[in-house]
Image 1 (cartoon, rainbow over the protein chains, first blue to last red):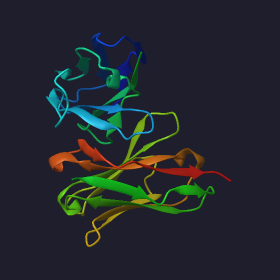
Image 2: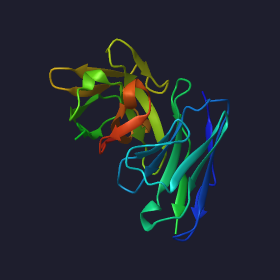
Image 3: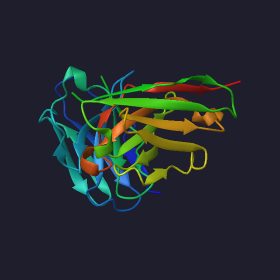
Image 4: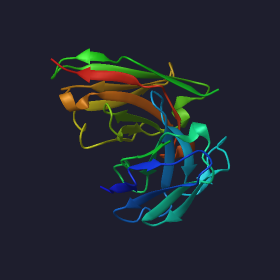
Length: 106
Length: 119
């Protein structure tokens, strides 16, 4: 099973600041990595797929990069609605796995 | 528009069974791989199972293999999961999610249904 390790666990920032979230895989997942955003009481929402492709309707301030084992989600300038938990997810190998999440808090 | 609505959650005793359903609208379920993903209270996401678009292939997480069975009703455009021999650690919100364009990228999610396994 591929283990995804997200860091940091919590990121404390202010609106307008840049957020950099990391996801490291225990073995290569090529570019088969996605990022999801989850707000309290809501279902996750797809942000980025295949490491760097923004999903439909996702603002340009969200960007993803990386391949192999190291991936980054960057939010260039945090909007108030961006404070949430972010999960990475790999679909390269079965079973599908998620990282433990990074909480972006004010 | 695409919508997924789960139902069937509730409180169930350990060892008992429960069946969850996910009603799809705005697309034809049989054209997509469909997944179940769960989230224990205060915890992260865990993939549970998938049924592929042709309906013939199904995969399960080791934690539920042999106890959970995923199925589809094409006529109703619904996805089900039959959960048997439930354990306390099955307690979670269960989401159904659509796989984007035949992949395992979850592009649409339902709102989730809570299953609590407790005596």
